[in-house]
Length: 116
Length: 112
Image (cartoon, rainbow over the protein chains, first blue to last red):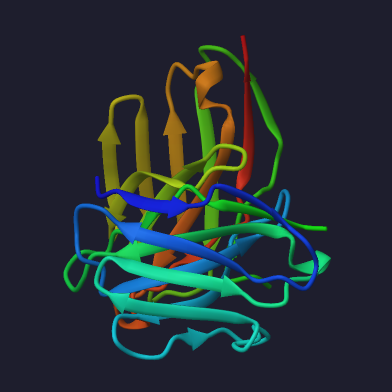
């Protein structure tokens, strides 16, 4: 299957700082990437859909000014959590969709964010 | 009512048992059905991918889709302790921009 690399896998930061998470498709071009958030023992919550070369589409209730998404190339999308607060502590996972005709979605390994 | 319902478990079975995991859904437009396995603090890993109704087998795993009943299943034969994980069902409608709708996940524990 396709490989999606996510980095870092774990980050601790102070309240008020910004954190950037990278998601790369290693062996395919991803026209669409998705960012999810997952709390302990809960399922994945879609935060936003990232399309290469255009603005991300955010799900209802997700602050676009707080969670900045950039999909500048067909292999890289970044999520920046700005002015992080303890309530932003969560497990963030990206996924990539290879393109039309392939319905399979591949996930990164996730990033555990802890805001002190 | 959630669009996709999945028993959260935990489901505890002895090693070697046959495991049955299930999801029900309400949206008749769903065409693509997937099962993902997620270990703790890891990203989901695609296990099975099925289009429309029918069965699909891959090693110890068998996926079944019954669109008439809006019911999908994942069977694991000869379960191993390494199968202990959370299993997520997911589905999509071709017209939904390939966005997946996930079940809540079932936590499986296989005891040696």
